[in-house]
Length: 185
Image (cartoon, rainbow, N blue to C red):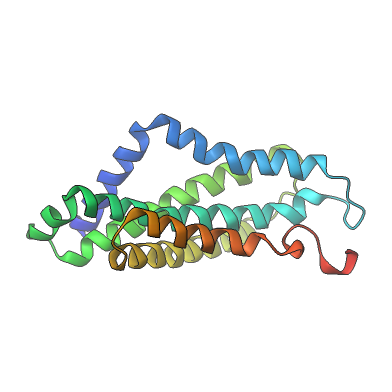
């Protein structure tokens, strides 16, 4: 368990040192929430923020989880992965540490988005509902991070990984029902 924590801590420190990366990962979903959630005139619901916020939260976790495969890919390309594999800690600690970091990063992003949505007018729910929201986001984040790291282990170069993760990220957002219910289209 200690090895998992150290690998997660290494990636967390690296992420927090890149201030621009932290800010940019929060700005895009927040911009979607503010500009789309408040700007679109909708007739099918009284509060469009209540409709679009869950989708933005899930898309944030999806993008965060799938982009996490790049961390493992860069460790692989730069030779750090070989050094980690030579260390005495169990090899699965590397993978679990990456997955833990990717999930924590996604939950931090989703928490900021959820806070912004409440500040600009989304409905405030009960603690149980927020607990369920976070449980679903964490499980989804672990699933996406596991998928991304597995893909990164099998793919040889960063360009192919980017193409695969872009395809997986864009696909759920393309259907029109992602932005409005099908019964009003």
